[in-house]
Length: 203
Image 1: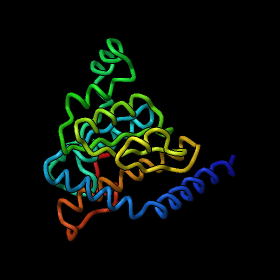
Image 2: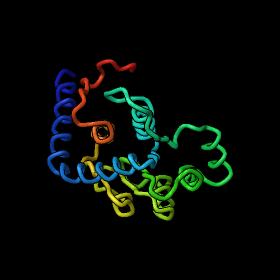
Image 3: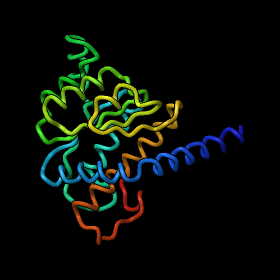
């Protein structure tokens, strides 16, 4: 069991290192585009299932609240939280449409949809991306394995090359934290002092 514990940490660290080495330039380019849109007053919508739903809520909370500095709240909405919408759409239409309907209602041209699926094949996430593209949102996927359908339909997709769902999710939330940090620094000055993550935090 001691070996299992050690290996889990090492595997996670190694996967993150490999991911950033492969995607460093892409992360910068895509995150810069997202930050510019937030600066222009656009909002970020997020969708995913299970642990990915939790990541959506986590990222939205960091943006609406704060990540590393005191600043104005930023517009981010996790489409995973309204149980009345989720159950009504799931019951009246299909579970595959629970995010698509919300993107149709809330998404506006120029907004950003971050769609998270460790397999890349979650039907409700794919449908949300297709609706977002129809409404001219920027679509960004966080996926795993070979990227799945999400890598084919999203404008940009970050693929974590692993078949381990926990390890993929660990890279995804790190990517989400980097996005929050990037947006704050882009919008509110590179020269400000940013405390280490957690310092002064209410979390």
